[in-house]
Length: 157
Image 1 (tube, rainbow, N blue to C red):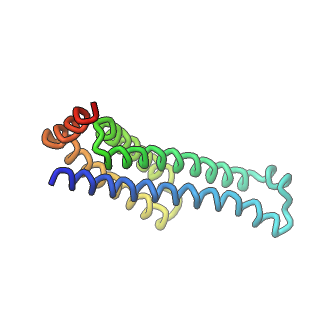
Image 2: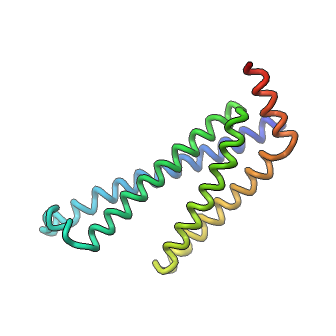
Image 3: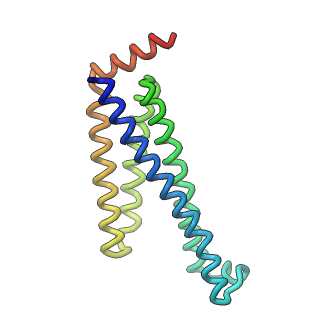
């Protein structure tokens, strides 16, 4: 029963990691598309670098790509360790989920003035990540769960 809960949490973490991969891919695609779009309308790349709005948009997309890639790597590493019921993965997941909650709250704070749709998306992100964080903390800090992971450490040695 406990192992089934661990596998369920690991699957949720894996899906979250795949969502971060998709977010990184989307940012990269949009980053490349910005240059092509403006070139299509006759604004050469060298001139795009002089337009503040285009430069800021490209920086935002580049930053999103980097942040989503880091979040994806951390989350996928945690998921793989949880699937194997490794003690380091339990602790690592608890740390990563805190970082992700801070990351999404920061996104919400920076996008407060971006409009109702963006604001609704950011609020949904924060609610989802806080829910996942609460479930992770509740399940992975139980004494019975800690013992399961500790037995895994003993069986590996």
